[in-house]
Image: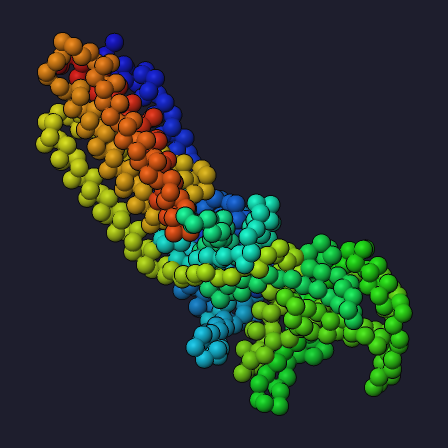
Length: 546
């Protein structure tokens, strides 16, 4: 049997090849992918009204909807997209073609609002020559490997519960936060519990391509919503609400009130949207209103003598008059309203719609069981992440070339240097494959872990090679004993590294978890899969030469 046949029929090599194939399938590489993928769709935006939906949080990068052309003009990258968007005219219908279908979208002017935290003022910028389609896009991914926040930009928020929470309560908090962010229209979300070495509980949230203020506003408030008539609570957010309208036909700026200028020169706008109550909540409302008195006000309008007061986190956000016809009636469909203010008409309209959007989200998801405080926030620029990936890839190529040269100079045997390089590359591919399969984000900490894995891998492969090439004591050591001797050293180093990584999973409130997990996965793959395969290959290639 020739050596190549022996290699490819070896059990250890077969296991390695199978894992490599599965890793490549999980990664699903497509370096020629063109277009822009949809990260999220703004609720109520032109794109949303046309039927384009935000991707599900659980969807992998390669499965996200991808824009191929607009008005039959090819969109190859994000520069093409924004260049074409800037050339569109207002109130025109454009045809957006994706890998899933074609949509007719009516264009609108692009408006930006810049908030200054120092002065608490918002500056409104209206671009009369550009269009806002309501799409948050990025260059089409070429693999299923998810880049972490450090590499693609976005917002990271570290929350600390005000009181200690049980595991069941933590599960509720995590599910609620994920639901809030999803309902709000954000995707590419990571929400997970973490703790530090002192046992303090935290919640880590990472949202790619999101604004820091909107994330903080959504996740830092408990979101306890109550609707009261007098002192009686008639319904709350969550289970008491069976439907919340978020489409343009039953939500938005109230046409009967609109926007107006106040006495101090500020502007205010009133929003309204429809909700449906559960039968139980409707009965509570009927029971509470049946004994109220009817009063006649200006214009012969008949109302009940108590109003429906809306409280968010124990603060009154609005009071609604109750029509006399609702006395003792278990009506399930009602209107919720509120307002927003600003220094200009556009700013007031924007703030009003943002307040409506947050209130709708809280009514859908309900309140958190515990109050959360913001411990730390970070905003990462996408350009910095892109530059880091580029430099890391370049340095990786250079390092691989240098390692190859050193190994060849050390052994002067292609039978050792070539399998060693192939082994190291295989480890990295399998690590990325596992990360893609389980949805683990590759961030700077994870890349540092991969560097550690490669470093320990080189060390272990040298130990194996040195043991197999030993000239002395060949009488007393057969090939199996030499390999066992090498793996005794390797296993001792493996368990030392494994134990050292465990505390890092919780260090820094879990911010080093990516480093620890990636290192553990990498060294485990190396010790149990790739390095035994390397030993088998080298044994087959060198057994007759020594």
